[in-house]
Each structure stands twice: as structure tokens, then as C-alpha cells.
Length: 362
Ligand code: IPM
Ligand code: MN
Image (cartoon, rainbow, N blue to C red; front, side, top):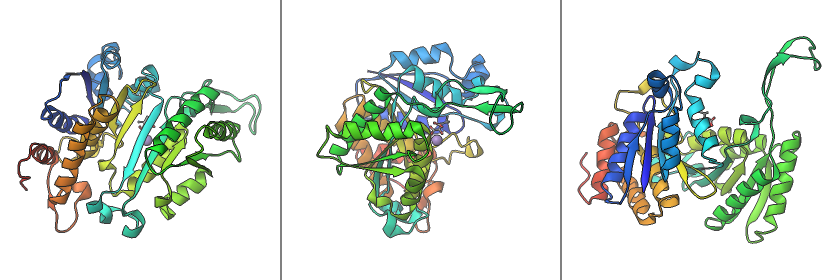
């Protein structure tokens, strides 16, 4: 097994180093190879996703990704910005299914901005379609308007579109995931306004006929945003398009107390995947050794479960994370009165200690 390690920018290098540390104590037959991506790759090679990095990602069984982006690249032309690296990897590797679990750990119930009783035991799986929608739809660009409210004015446009097979495959994935959970799928759309999402709703409803044991409901995205903060525990699996999924997964992440805890998987049709924390590169705290590595460590666990067929090793990592939380260790983002504040490396070391059966030292 080969894992491509792409740490990226900002805190990416610090948190990925901890996940690699954890993978290395599991004694599994894999090799790793590291490459530059994002702003770091632009600085070294003039492109955020160099050919060599893409080739490594394609050849590997799985990709462990940190984060990309830094303010200093915000003025570059779009095709050279760090974000293009992750968008390019999703597209070129065919990573159409993005799984973003929002799990509220018992010890962190009080870190949420919602009342503890609303989030205690929360366990939602957001499934975001990742290679279609307005993110990738063509045509897009700038031009002089020939119609609309201001003919002759400068305008910009993007295209929202979904094909039947794109909707079908993500719907199947969502129903199958629900079968292994609490058996409920909420499909989020904007069918009251958008043709694309009326089609989405129709196709999801058709696919549902093959899953009579799974409950399906449909929700408009604005209502879903509201229900997520009103009664989040009513959700089990949420399936939605690329842009709504981007927005709702950040919202769901915050319910759990910290986005620093949440892993993600982006899968292709053969369950090959890219694994990354749900959070970004946080350039404001980069290099300080204070970032929370748990989302990346938990992403490595997802990688073992979904792509590398090592469910026991994945369990060991997840139990170790619970153990360090139970022992009271916290990075700054999840710290509260009465717990022990630790940095990135100490947190990684504590997970390693929990896996190898050593006492977790504070
Ligand atoms: C995410 C990020 C990306 C997205 C950006 C960095 C392109 O926000 O993974 O959610 O919008 O998909
Ligand atoms: Mn996002």
C-alpha cells in the first residue's frame, strides 16, 4: 500500500506530521511519499498542483492531505491560487463523494456554541457531491451583458448543473451509508427555485425506490441551515450538492465545538480516496505548534477504514482519540477550565501513547 502525503500550507505541515506519527506506530504494511501542494508548491514550482504531485496522488492507494491556502496568494490569478490544488485533485482523481461526519464527543459537549442538550450525542454524516454543481459547471467567465437588468454592463457568470448519473451515484452512496447508521437520509435542495435542484430531488426520489428500508425526506437548503442549529439531532445522513454541502458542512462542524476535530473522506467510484481535515490552513496560527491535529489523525483513521481495509487499526486510532480527551488533554481550540492545554506535538504523542498502551502523560 502506498500513501501519498500532501501536507500543503499553513498548519498543514504540523498536523500531517502528527497523523504520520500515529500511522507509523500501527505496524501496517504501507509506504509513504511526500510532495508539495498548494501555495508551497506554487512557491517552489510555479504551480499549486505540479504534474509530479498529481502523478504521485494518482499512483498512490490513498492520499493524506493537510490544507492549502494563504493570504499572500490571494492576489494571484485564479488558476494559480492554492485552492486550485484541492479542486484539481478532486477533479482529476474523480473524487465525487465527500463524507464529512459531524460527531460531538462527550467530553466536548460544552465547547459547542449550542446548549449541551442540543448537541450531546450528536452524530450526523454530511455527504457532499464533490465534482459537479456550480463549482465545476461550464460555461463560466466574464463578459459584457447582452440582456438582463443592465445590458451593456460588465457581468460574471457560473453554471449550476447536474447530470442524472452524477445524482444517482451520490444518492446510492447516501442510502447505503444510512443503512449502516440510523436509516434516515435528508436530501437538501432548492427545488422551489432552481431547475437543477428540482431534477436533483426527482432523481433522489427515484433512487430511493430501491431502498424501501431507508427513510427519505427532502428539505430546502435555507430550512436545513435553520434546522441544523434548531434541532441538529433530527438528522442522520444529509446528502446534497457541492455548494450547499460546502456551506452546511461548516455549519454542522461548529455544532460539535471545534472544526479542529472533524475528519473527511473524498472517495472515487472504487473507494480510493483523499483524506483531509475539514478545516483549512489557518495561516494565523501556522508555525506556532498550537493547531489541533485530531481532525487529521481521525482522517487517517477514515483512510484505514474506507480505502486501506484496516478497520481494526481505524478503531484503535479512534479509541485512542477518545482516551486522550478523557484524560483531559486539549489543544487551544477545545480547551476549557479544568483541562490541560497542550500543543500539536504533545497531542500527537498522547494519541501514540494511547495506541501503544503507555500512560498518557499530561
Ligand atoms: C472545502 C473548502 C474548499 C471548497 C475550498 C478550499 C476550495 O472550503 O473543502 O470545503 O470550497 O470545497
Ligand atoms: Mn468549505
